[in-house]
Length: 210
Length: 187
Image 1: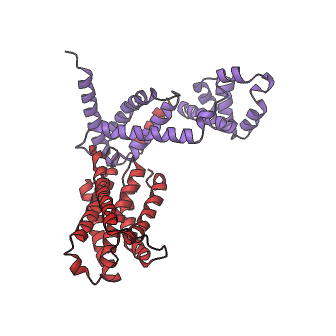
Image 2 (image 1 turned 60 degrees about the horizontal axis):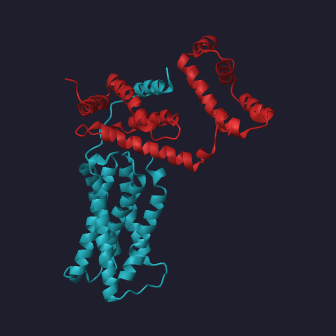
Image 3 (image 1 turned 90 degrees about the horizontal axis):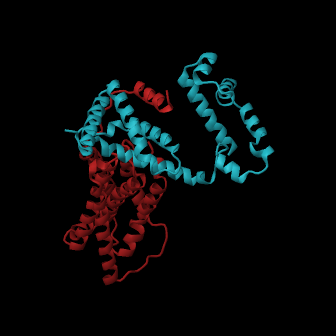
């Protein structure tokens, strides 16, 4: 009897009935509800920016919020699909958040060109703390959801997890911080989530191993 | 009429799909049939792209373990083969990444006769007998005896199994593991 046959016998012996992983749409729902409820709570706790009512009449602000919400939602969907080894045949799904992010960054570039880009002085800003507070629970929840699957693309899973959390956190920060410049948003609102993404990407093989 | 290869593959995929669904429900017979059927398929798929055909068995075993671990992610409304092939590609890449990052491609074993003939000219030191002996001495007594009888003295697995009071498969696994351990120590 070869090693492979012995292994097959061992695996067969250890077989237990399996509870199938729910459909990815179903699996993201708890995260969406949890993240939205948590973000609402944190935004209220930190204090809503005083000019928020007027900002809702600003097309640029609405585009920013809409684009980043779409990035977050599509990235968490991609994370749920990545939990299945073959992604249920919809590998193109990861292109959606990346394309939306690309459009958002292009729009930031255009704004920086037309409005003038001023690099803010680097210092520890309260936005870093706020970003950490906003991102912690959604990040823990999306990583937990992702580790319950069996991804064959751990690095991409890390990127999608970071995008879902980062984009949501960015939206939350736009509701609390009154600074609208591209420089401030790029450095103080995105940097903490970029750092999170880099860390998660670097440790992805370890975090999402199975 | 003889079925075409495409039809054969389609029916094979459907059978695997049925077995996988049954295995998810805890059917051990279907699961054993599934694993026994996909093991040689996996080996044949990967062996062509490997520098060393011996790796194919290691990778195939890794894939079987991965299939076992991730069986809950298989969805009955999806074909089985793409799901399995995603795991095969992942494990193959993972194996090769680990192999090359540990510079495994720069190492060779003492069993490589071509290498020994072309690179080792000092015969008394060719086998590094002292190293081998000391590595053997570090093994547990039972494991050493199995290895010695099978690999040095040339007894068959069945004869060793009778002598040691073990099953034939256990003897083979023990000898295989000892060989691997010695190779790792001596490289």
